Length: 316
Length: 289
Image 1 (cartoon, each protein chain N blue to C red):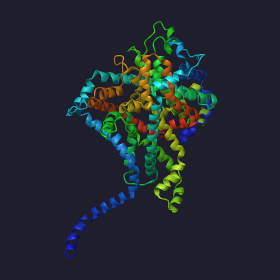
Image 2 (cartoon, rainbow over the protein chains, first blue to last red):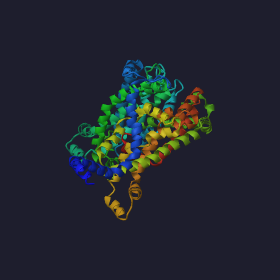
Image 3 (spheres, chains in turn blue, purple):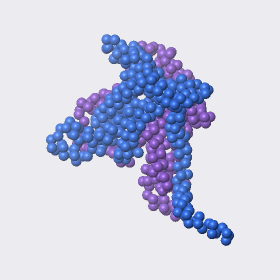
C-alpha cells in the first residue's frame, strides 16, 4: 500500500482529465443504454440490408465472378468500364431517361388536372378520386396482365375497339418503335392517381383570402391559376417529380411480364439490366457496377428528395 | 397530421368555385371512365364463357350467359390458394416484426435522450434515400449466405426494419402528453409497460396507417420475391400470377387470365373500397414508400 501510493500519484495527476472524459463517456453510454437497446433490433436489419448492402455493392463491383462457383478475381474498375462499354447498358440508360421523362410529365400533368377538377369534396368527386386511385393499389404484375390483353394485336381490347380505325394496325408490344411507349402508358395509368393525392393536399394550402382578394381585384380563373395556385403548388411539383423519377428507376415489373426488355432491347430499363446480369448471367461484378452507377446517379436526386421532404410541412 | 386533415376539407372557396373549368371537369370524368376500363374488362372477361370465343373477348358488354368457370379454372391451374397463403404469411410476418422494431425505435427517438441521437437519426434517414429496390443484388447474396434462399423468411427479412415506420411512430409518440407517462412512472410502471399501456394504445391510427402502406407494398412486391423464391409452392401471388399468365397466354385463355388477375387484386380492392379514407390518407402520409 505505502509502496503503491507514491507510484500511483503521478500517474493519477496526468491521467485525471482523461479518466474524467472516459468516466463521463461511460456515464453517457450507461444513460443512453436503454435507447440503444430499443434501437438495436432496427439497426441490426438496417446494417445488414441497407448499409452493409451498400458496402457489398462497392466491394462486389471490384471483383469478377462470372459463375456462382468460379473463383473470385480482383479486377479493380474493370466491371465499371465493362458496363459503360456495354451497349445494352447504355441503351437501358437512354431508354430509362426517355421512360422517366415520358411518364413523369404526362402523369404529373394529369394528376394536376384531376386534383383541380376534384378539389371540391362530394359524393361524385369522391367516386372519381377512387376510380383514378384504384390502379395505384394493384400490383404492377396484375396491371401488366390486364394490359397484355389490351395490347394484343387484332383481337385485343385496343385494336378491337379503336385500333380498327387506324390505317395500319400496330403491334403495340412487338414493334421496337412503339413498345416503350406502350409500357409508358401502363405507368401513367398506374401513377397519375397517386400524384393526384399530393396535388389535392397541396391545393388545400392555397390561402383563401389571397384567392378572394384576387377575385375581387378582377383576376380571372386562369390568372389566379397562373399567379396564385401554381406558385403555391411549387413544393408539391418538386416532391412529385422526385417520386416520379425514383419510380421510373424502380418500377420494372411490367418489363418482366410483358417484354423481357425486348423487342431488340427497346424496353430494357436499368433495373432490368441489373437483374439480367445478376440472375441470368451470374455476373455479380457487372450487376454491382451497374447498381453503383445507378445509385451514384440517384444520389443527387435523393439528396434533393431529402431536402424536399424536410421542407414539406407535416411530411414524414 | 396537418396534411391529411386538409386533404378531406374542401379547397378554398374561390378555388373550387371557379378555378376548375367546366371543360376540365368533363375531361376528368371521361378520363376516370377510361381509367376504369381495364378493371371493367377484367370483370366482364372473368364472367364470359369460353364458348364466346376469342373474337368476343374484347367486348365490354357482359355476356348474357355469365359463368364462374374461369374462376374455377384459374383457381385450379394456378394454385392460387397456395399463392394467397404465401403472400398472407409474407405480409403478416413483415408487419408483425415491423410493429416491434418501429415501436421500440420510434419511442427511443421520441422520448429518450442519448449520445449520438442525431447521427443515428441520419442513419435511419439514409434508408429512405438509398432506394432499397436497387440493393437487390447484394441482398440476394446475403440471403443466400444466411441460408435463407428460397424461403419466405428470406423474402421478409430485408423489410423487418422500416425507417418510414420509425419516423411515423416517433411523430405519433411525440404527440402524446408526457403527463400521462409521468403518472404511470409514479405508479411504478416500467419502460415496456409504459410503451405497451400508454404509447401503443394511443397511437393506433398511426399503426393502422403504417399497416396499410406496409401490406399494400409487400402484397404488390414482385422483383424481390422473384429473385429469392425458387420453389413453385413458395411463390407469392405476384410471382404466381406472372407464371400463370405466361402459361395461359400460350393457350389464349384470356378469361382465365382475367380471373387470375381478379383473384390477386380482389383482397386489396375490397379492403380499399371499405376503408377508402384511411387508405388515401395513409398514402399521403407515406410520400415515398
